Image 1 (cartoon, rainbow, N blue to C red):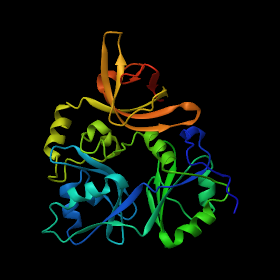
Image 2 (image 1 turned 180 degrees about the vertical axis):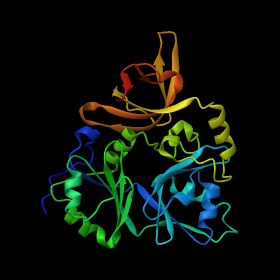
Image 3 (image 1 turned 60 degrees about the horizontal axis):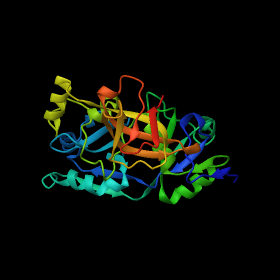
Image 4 (image 1 turned 45 degrees about the vertical axis):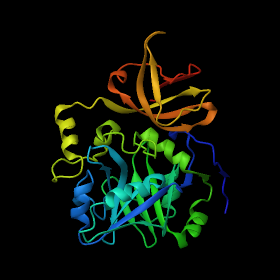
Length: 322
């Protein structure tokens, strides 16, 4: 096996990314099984569970009673089991909230530790995958199942894939597929998620933002026609009255001080007028000292070309990423 290189701390922008495989150790799969799965999940999640089927995964969110997001996720179905992917650091807290009202339902919710999750992306990735898989997911059927592997296609920021395989099979999978590929980590996948404008929630930001403020509407993660679920009344009011004042944006720039998740990014109109423009959701260090930020931004600062600064740090400068 010839593997080109291993980059643990080097993160490329999507346009610069060579064919790369990433083991997503900081992600996990939550399984939901039982006769009441559909009914129960529809009462908890923002999407219509009935739209999730064997050939199509969906995006959704789990919110608290006030409509604030516990987690965004990708959910699919296999062997009559619902499975959703979330970040490991928030999994226990999110599952605790999801299980709160399950005592009278025929449902079981647990972390499935029998699978490993990989991301593959970069230049020429389709050519590599077609040598290994007889058929790949497409825009109509965005998920495919093989004997020991599940393959999911994502479209943004460019075509990339999630590959979920059984633990016992993962070594052989890597040995075969990683020929002439770079090997990287969760950081690279996180950067691609930021470029895609998909929200990343962690222990600092959990339960703080509405789905509309995190652009989840554009991922078709919200449904208002399926009946009641937690937070729905508030989310519907925000949608109907158009009173959401935030929008998720991607910034790129430099800073001598590494940005802190949960802190404010500032807009300096002049020396005396400094405004809190948005809250940092996630940070990734790129090549050449560049930093990529995911920010929940006040809409009033999203309309024009502006420069932003880390709160209290003038030795930084960020602009909108395009």
